[in-house]
Length: 150
Image 1: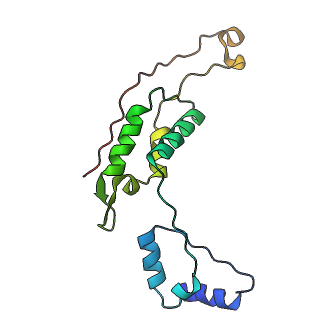
Image 2: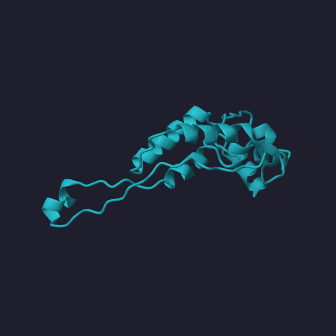
Image 3: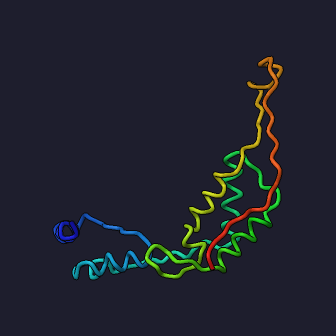
């Protein structure tokens, strides 16, 4: 399959652009898997992990979009900070920041998708227009608990 990719890159170099993306270690393995690959991928861009503040902002935005409100971000910020300072083994056995092992931005998405939705009543579902009482749901704030090996 890699030989086919290289052949296509050579035969169609005037009209073919190939972009590959992945985690740094996996990309090195890929480039080392065939002696012709590294010379054909001459540019690399390393994207840094999101910072704690960026992850908090992502979580708040996604939670809001999903209908939830985070009233106190400090437990969330502390959890992200703890995970950023902790380390964990990734699937290859390499020790990395725990927040990165958990997926960094995807982890923020997972956190925000697990938050309860707030009740929103619109004109079409209001008690007056439907003749019924809308359901209510109260959510109490609770500290975020996330465990990662150190």
